[in-house]
Image 1 (cartoon, rainbow, N blue to C red):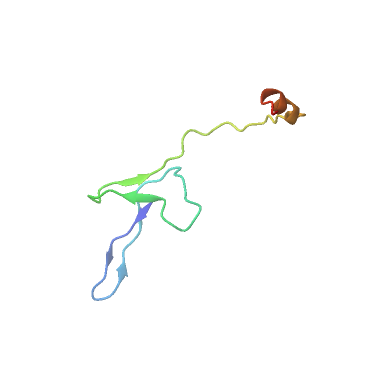
Image 2: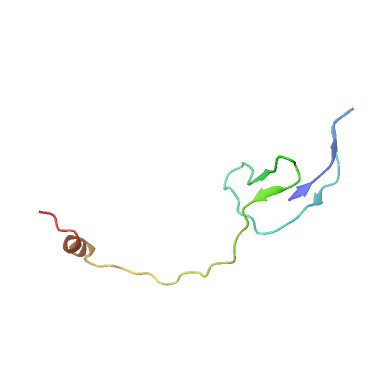
Length: 76
């Protein structure tokens, strides 16, 4: 997250950007903001990525699952 001071009068003048903080935060996948600001404008609210999850390498294939379903939920 970056910030920059700006002036608007007499013309718009952006200041130099500075890093506020960085980290693995969850994005929205859209162009909308992935954060909010508290009412007092003192804090950001963001969802931080948790510890990396292990990649699953197992893949289960269930054969004849419809027969199992019929056995578990008989229909008369």
